[in-house]
Image (cartoon, rainbow, N blue to C red):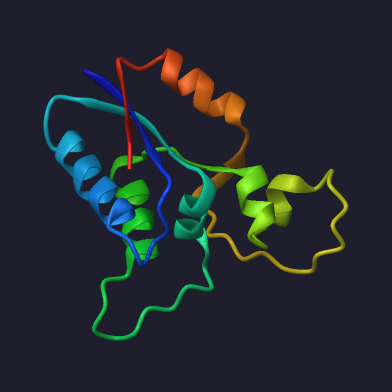
Length: 130
């Protein structure tokens, strides 16, 4: 079965992101196919490289990166949600003049629009929101 995941919760403060990560791993370890993971609203905070968990906390942002590196899952974040939260990847948005001098997104995450989410949903059999 083909799945798309929609993550709307931040990396810390709720269980949305951790539940999504565990579900994604379970899918990838079985015969199911994970088409993409789309981070929307507060979920885009999972891509912020300025998140620094304390030493005894689980590093959720790094865990998403490891999922990307191990399985090649596409990690899309909503550009509008990201910009509203002060997040930017200059390399992905060279045509937008925000006068920003640095990135705060990990390179494993790709800034996209809701159109990407719509296409992923059309190519999936199930959409699961966290």
